[in-house]
Image 1: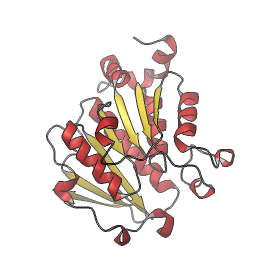
Image 2 (image 1 turned 120 degrees about the vertical axis):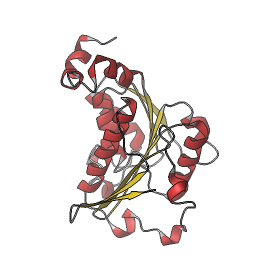
Image 3 (image 1 turned 90 degrees about the vertical axis):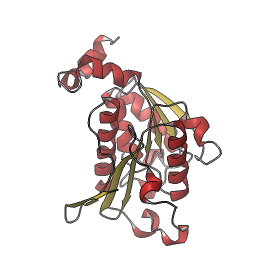
Image 4 (image 1 turned 30 degrees about the vertical axis):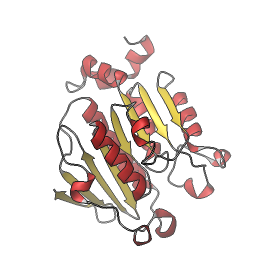
Length: 236
């Protein structure tokens, strides 16, 4: 099942009782979709690939800009103007040549969400707009797929796991998306470079726990203020 290089790569992970060889097999057989290859998607893709997730689908149509580089640390100045998903695949395969990466060079919408996401076992939403978030959520509910959710702004991050083992979904806490003009975004309001790295890594942690059948964050919306280091857990 594992090559000699794979066995060495994952050895410090498989000695954990919660993982073991059986858990590593689960990761290798898993198919995970990552929506967005930006600030959250970069650490997600890196850690999923490094941890041995067998197939990672990257859904992103955007190109790399100079203003991305302080937080989207998969990319460098030479990558500006290139497609994020393409460069993310290159970097993930350089990191772990045994990873399987599938690209979807498109925006995820109500029209294509089910077709794309039905190919995966788990979905991680690292996008940057609410229309996509609700399209992802609704498709996951219809398909019965667990969804790891995260968002960032300024010094703050938010994290949840929806639709896992009968748990609630995004619409149970926020029934309708807000008006686009009422929602602040990183482009207009800024974000500290490390914030997406921290939240994206926490999202990867929840995703790996889902795949390993460990206890995950369910029916809880976690808000983390990284300036004050205060955490608020909203039960719903």
